[in-house]
Image (cartoon, rainbow, N blue to C red; front, side, top):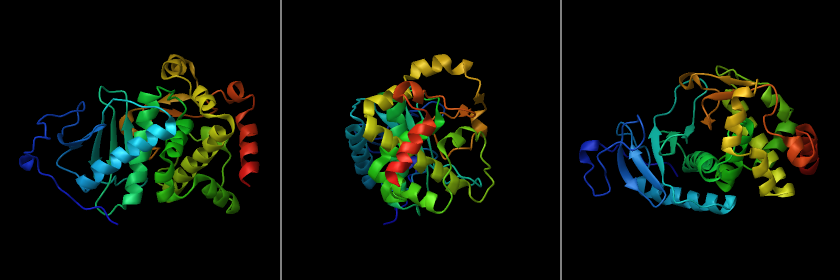
Length: 291
């Protein structure tokens, strides 16, 4: 089923649900729908989805993430849409969580399938859960993106398939990359025809690995690996492998957890300290298990 286009002109928004004011920082927009956990608004009058479907879907996704992560929140998140990114390696979505109102942004057009749209929404909202509800560390980009992909669970799988199955395919086709190699990639080639394919390989590989960590060692161990947001922020300036860049130039990741950093060189997370095994040792055990 395809998504229905609704171009909502601000001049016609007259229901009691509409508030004539922007709700998120410097982004201009009008609130057009509200749910128990979300405020949906139109930025530049652009909303390429059926709002009745969206209202139900985002609350269903929120309930799914609440159960999957074992946490709950009364915080309301913001959600908006933008036209598709036209860059060679386009951004699919953004998660902004260091503002008064945490927000998910999805780059979409009316032709986007509902399966893909829901997968992106679940991933983005999972980032907000990561930072605002779990209050977990955000310095390790690979863990952050892999965790959001894992948390999206059935929504991601409906779009791209099961991460473990995808990893088996990567290995069979000779396209699998060792997890430590992702820490040595500081700036992927965004002009490459394989950019999106490589990005999805990264997300699926890390999601499959995180599924193994949580399944074999438990969710609390994994939360320990993520660390607290405050702890990682305290050490961030002293970590030599973190490169600070202008967020406006950040196009390396389709779905951004923290657009101010790229991690390269070595893992930020302490795999050895938490699990008693290095990343490569844990990866070896995981691959043997899913082989």
